[in-house]
Length: 319
Image 1 (cartoon, one colour):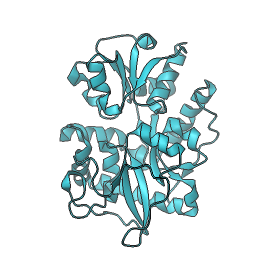
Image 2 (tube, helix red, strand yellow):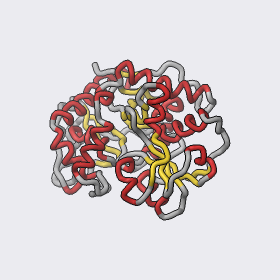
Image 3 (cartoon, one colour):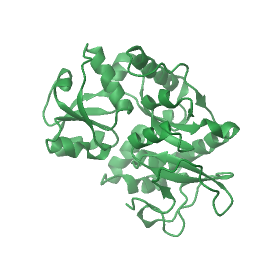
């Protein structure tokens, strides 16, 4: 995979990018370099003359109107931090992060990652009880990830509220860190949920399964958000984002082919399976159940003083 092809930004400039050569307004869209996000936004890819991932040439598959989308690929913890500074016009972020940036961003009704009966996991080199998690060293993908928030809620439900012994590790290194013994256990997100067993690790708890059993709701993990200063344009931008997801689902083979550039050695079957886990009906629209799940997660966390009171959650829908 070409880690930084032309048209993909990894810089931290806070100012709005200039218009493109074609006069279209450039909008930066931040997302993780993983298969499900790549799948969703493949129809917005705009990489001329072999400048795209894998040396490919791509042009948008959907009508992007007066906009051209510049992909900004960073891990979710970095995107959470950038959202706090309001740097990107459109960004993926953890639902955990949203109460901290609700003054700058509004959640889009599409683009969500929801685990319905499955989700992030704590894994370890050997079997251990959930109650033992506070006693071991733990690798986590970020303090503001929804996975870490859910883990804290699980422990609170067990009457455990003492500090955890954790370190933040890039999400794609957690399995290695646990396998090598640098940490006793790891909180894994993304495709590690399908591959942790390859390194001899075992599941301690599946947080999506725990959440579903407790609340009969999907676990909201990631969302997409548009910066509020885009004003009346937000609904039109959301329409284009929804069109991208619709197109990817309708042209699955081509979208999976593109996503494989970000699959980190997953075979096609596993990558397709992972995409199916997190690009689903909730991704097209949260719906009433998805919105209830977001409200429940954030309200439960606020009651336990883990986050500020989120109030009523805003969503912007396509116009």
